[in-house]
Length: 105
Image (tube, rainbow, N blue to C red; front, side, top):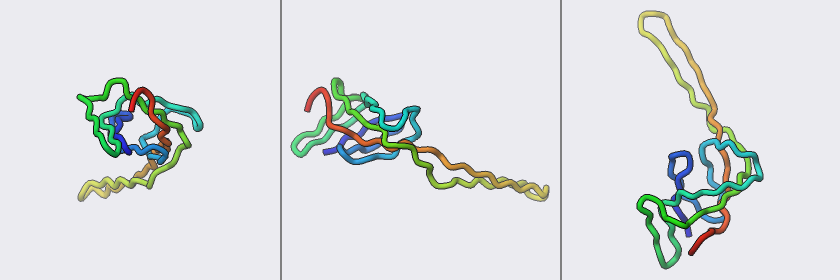
């Protein structure tokens, strides 16, 4: 059983009981969040597809913590000008564990 959800205008495949890594949310660890934007919900014998979202179907998630991603390096240069610059950053991700559904099957 899985569902496709939208968090921060990005779509993620979420399974109940499995953690997913999403872009950083402004939520403290061990807090619950409510996911109302469910695009698709699939069980063993049925599939519900929203237009664009499934009404009345909500998922609960628990924020497990914050992780840093791999370093992203950006190299800038201008030819024949002796200009070279390397910068980098590590994006933050929130780890969310999806809990059982509310409001329907």
